[in-house]
Each structure stands twice: as structure tokens, then as C-alpha cells.
Length: 384
Image 1 (cartoon, one colour):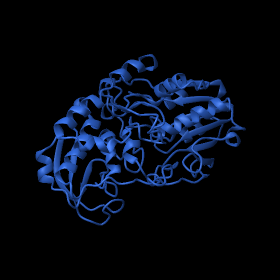
Image 2 (tube, rainbow, N blue to C red):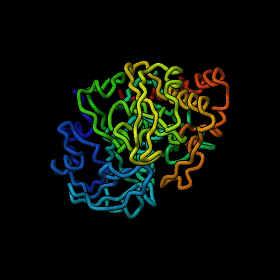
Image 3 (cartoon, rainbow, N blue to C red):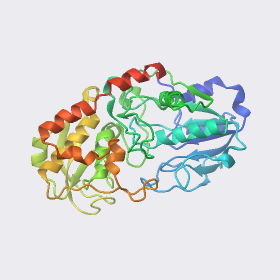
């Protein structure tokens, strides 16, 4: 049995439970009884006085990249302050009546998934305003096996954004608690930080091994397969290829009206792929029939999501040079949407990589995704 950080906290019944607490959370954060963290804390007498919510809002239903407004939580009747609007971090006014900040948001193990970066803004605010931060840790659903982590590391000189603030690999294979410890030390943040660990999780586990149903963490991450494929297929955001938004299988199916799937599947790469057609209801090619591919990862222990996503884009670009395009991707934090591939991949002038011959491209990305230095540097901060 796996126990989340929230379950372990409730079992502790800490002396500070009656202090004024602000909780950073969303509706995907639940305990082992499937009760939302914010409600579970309230039920057990914790003095939670306000909530902070990340991208997609407290209800996890907000559109990708769309501003989220402040509000009142219907479940707990607590005020909700959005950290994905005109501000990304709590300010002095938000924290002046707070003693402790709790953080509990499920992550999916990918650098450009924004909950991680909300955590870093909260970490910095906690240090600046001298508030204790307690992170209720959760397992990485695409495993904590550092041998499966994949660079490239983010170039902090050219590629810093809200989908990548610090230099870590694209697939990091860590928990948010471990990353908080790493950033707190290596970025000289020096917040008063405590991690409440999970119990029963081993680093080589994937989400299906937990024996607990997958809770969608955002509108486009509906299941384990989408989470596992996301570090690679998320790169499609920077192209005119649909990543499956507006369907029931985002980041599991991809396509465009002009793709020849028979040519693409013949070229393909070590996972199950079948030709399909689909009609998105929103986003790219809304209400148009797309020729596409549905992926299924049969052996997660040997699947390199970043490598496969890069190779997929290269193959489509080479097969369809007359149709393929790089596209901007406007969001609340990048309104003009420019240089989106650089921000996702973490590499300056990354589009040039795809102009290499296929052989040179494969050689280049095999070096690019190597994460051995990361694996070494993270060792002092691993909790499991």
C-alpha cells in the first residue's frame, strides 16, 4: 500500500495543526480515501484559512495556458487565490496572516508541466517572507528510476520561462519534494523547508504499480499513458501537428489532415502504434478529420519518451516538408507564444536540430538526452 504525504501528515497529528495554514493545492490532490486534501485537512481540524491554486485552477478544469481567477472553493468555503494569473507567487499581503504554507499538488515528472514551477515560486516566497513551507510529497507516476531520466538540461541563459525556470532534465525522475530540496540548496533559496515523505513507494514503480486509480492531473492528462508519453509528445505543442487536445486521448493520439500514417508507421520506433482517424473538438484542426496515430507503451521500463517524441517530429517533418510548420503557442505566461520549442526543449535555436540528416539527428539526440550528470548530482537529495 502507498501512502501519500497527506496520509502521513494526517497520521502524525502535528502540534502546529491549529496554526494559520495556507494550502497550495488542486482537486487532483486526494488522500488514500479519495478525499481531496483540502477537505481531509479541514475534517481533521487543521486550521486552513486560504487556498492557492496553480494552472488549470482549483477544479483542474481550466484550459491549457488560460488565466485562472481568484474565487471561493465550493467544497471548503475557503478563499482561493490564483497563482496562474497576473501573479505566479504569493505576495506579502497573501502571506501576512499565515504561519505555515502546505503544498500538495500531483506532478507527472516532466519539466514543462507547470505545477513544479508553481512550487518553486512558493518556495522562494516562503524564504522571502520567512514562512515555513511543508511539502506533502507524492510519487512520480512515470517512475523515480533515474536511469530513465532524459535530458536535455534547460539552458538558463536563453530558455528560462514558466515551463522551465531552472536547469533540470526534461524528464527528471524525481518527486517534487526531492526537487524542492535540490533547488533550495543549489539555488541558495534557504527556505525553512520540510518534506513529509510518502510511504510504500519504490523508485522503479510506475503509476499502475500503485494499485490506485489514476486521477487526471489536468484536462489533457487523463491517464497513465498520456502522462508517460507527455515528455515527448508535449513537444508537438510547438508544431502544427495535433497532440490530441479536443479528444478523449490527448497525448496518446497525434495527427493532422495531411499526415500519411502508412508511411509514418513503417518508419516507427519501439512502441505500439496504430493508424486512426479523429476529429478534435477544439485546438488544432477543430472539427476537421485528422489522420493520426494512437500510441501505447507496452514496456514502460524501457521507454524513452523524450527520444521518441523528438524522433516522431523529425520523421513527420521529413515525410511532409510541404505541410509541416513550427507554430507559436500563446499562453498566459508567454502571450506571443514565440520560441515555444526552445522553451519546451530547453535548447537555444532548437528548430535547427531538425534540419540535420536523419542519421546525424539520431546521433545528436542520443547524446542530447544523456542524463548521467543529473543522476549523480541528485543523489544527495533523494528521499526514497
